[in-house]
Image (spheres, rainbow, N blue to C red):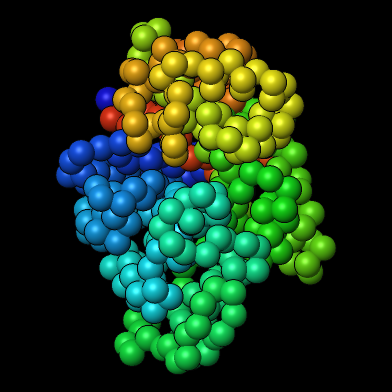
Length: 355
């Protein structure tokens, strides 16, 4: 493991890079703490938590990581507003801010209408997202919330005890133009979806900053986090599992796959071949909840090869480092490395620093 250890107080080129702990499905969350300490030791600026209910609870993992690290930011990428009562969510966020020394960033997403229907909660419309964000900010600042609207009915909410820390930034996951506009107008940043090309990232960053400026905000204050599936120095089979597994999971979802393809300028007609694969027949929900990455690698062969290559960083560590720089040059403020645990990123990060 190549170390690019960070000296507090000195400029660190890796501040603009972060990585997920526990990427994908896991049965045992305990490895998250070791992966987080490795990420910080390597010099990564942010440790990202992809919340999955059952083994990757944001509050539990974030609290553990906050005590095992000292300076890397800790971010959710992503959680959701409605799964926790607004009071419980604000309480968790402010406790996390206090425990971590104000290192927490709260990333939330819209998800899809079928998911909200399945769990019996209202869909995340633009207005619901904005209303939840405003309630969250008000509670985190010690204010009282009285609300009756599309996000629910909350007669009287206030945190009983408030730590002396600033509220965390709220980042909105985005891919489509309306959500990107919403991020620029009402949120502190956006988390771009994995598998975007550099051209798509450039267009998204431009749109977010234009929306911020139109709303009278400083466009540079709204941060753009591009998520890049990264697979350095892997065998062909390993790379197919990491990259192919992610691609199938995203592209097989009806409507969402078309949206992702369209944003990248790809022909959505290619999705017919993917969804006709026998393994996906009758599948409801995301593919990675039903199959392993290795199983999905076979399905990924149904997608055009350039779809997998143009929206990821693959190949040697040096090639991946150059590719990450291309995403930053495209307009991202920071990158979220996805698919490779921090333990495997040392050589790539060293090439990134030495470039």
